[in-house]
Amino acid sequence: MLSKLFTLVLLLTNACASNDLNTKAQEIESKFLKAKLTRLSDIDSSIKVNLVNSNTDNNFFKMNFYGNLNECYLQKKIIYKLKKAQAFLKKSNPNLSLLLMDCARPRSVSWQMYNKLKGTPFEKYVANPATGSMHNYGSAVDITLINANGSHLDMGMNPFYKNRFELLYAVTKNKLFPSLSKEQSKNRLLLKSVMEKAGFKSIKLEWWHFNGFLKKTIRKKYKIIE
Ligand SMILES: [Zn+2]
Image (cartoon, rainbow, N blue to C red; front, side, top):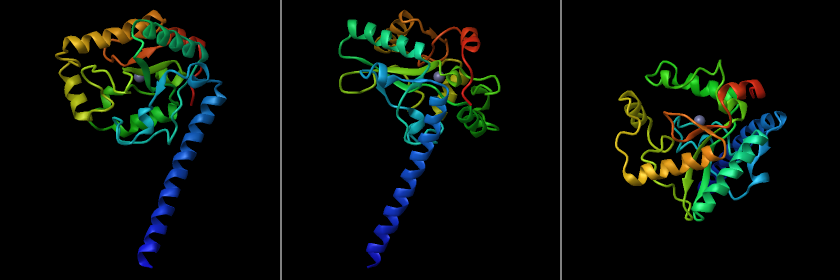
């Protein structure tokens, strides 16, 4: 009897947790829809998505910011650029695919991230959301390459799946990518080349981050999603 009761309590607890995750995902998604963002899978379903901010175990913050959302939302023009990048990639490497790890991110989530790191040694590595990150405009992506089995290509370091101390170490030493093997360099260059060919702008310190346009163009063209 007791064990039955225990199972029931466990089931109810799990049901509540999954309801919370649903609610959180719906809240985020409704912000994106209100901002008239486009869903990647509606334009190109061949591109893979695994949002790190929906995954407590794997993300840098060890927090789930998006509930169980696993759709990539972006400005329509940026989605079309991704479609182009995937086509360029498939042309030279039919077995590979782009994998989106973060797309549009509401500024409210950026604030949560910022506040979480405030007062820690990591504080200076997170941009102040007051000015707005390009993710807040639905105009930036965090992205990598995967093979036909769904495994990440070796990029030397995936900051989202490593613990934060490694990232801190790497950044403080100002050698974010201290010693890349030939294979790792080749993989990063492949990602960079298909993304840039499709019109994305890369940034120096983060191999995984690309802006859909120049920053000033984005700020002029689009509004921040709060
Ligand atoms: Zn980013």
